[in-house]
Length: 291
Image 1 (cartoon, rainbow, N blue to C red):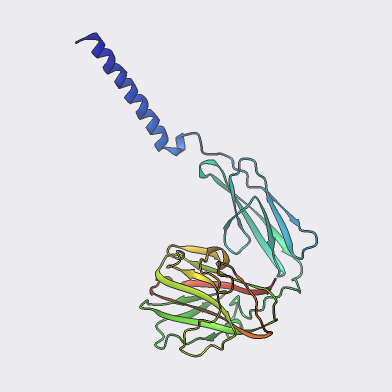
Image 2: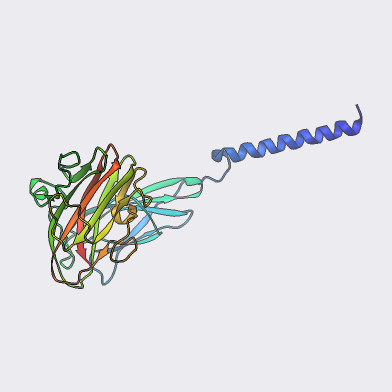
């Protein structure tokens, strides 16, 4: 065989081996040297001067690409420095998840003890934590499901909406007194271990009195909707974070509301769909507070 041909074939073989080695490294992220080790999730907690029950969470930044925070309401992506408000007295466990190169993570938790509730920001929702029968009794059924096919069930600390699909829906509501032109925020924890299709979960704060069997549509504030792109997969967290339904008052995703008169409004939650999750959508810690 011609010597030049042998040399060319040898060169091609060496190139193929080299390329194969590079490809092998790229396909195995555990061996590419890019995954961080010993991720430091340490953070500090400091009260914010001049603000009631407000705390600054500051993560150390060395080697950390991004942060997740959880103050007991479900984990959410945040900044290295987060300001959190805890209006109610109690002990809160704050967990910081540090995310580093290659997706490596580490968690650190610290407690915040809030000695007294903020008198300027009481929770206007009665029974929103569903702790007992008295809490549950604060809520009325909207009676949107005449056959009972869609219904709410209650457990200690939670309420869950169930629907067999076929557009069956049900709602719960209560009256709340508000002040003209004052801004309020509404929020709650929502979760579901499986996704849905053709499903909604909507929160209203309207002045119209709910009527049995009549779908409520007065002043939609927030929610989940598979048509808008959320609730298609599993989710957990504050509705203000995981929701995607636009606020009628702001035409954007927002949990802030205000009213043009002083008096009574109705906080109403209704949910259902054509192909509803088999697990139901669970809600807890429903809150409405002045800003």
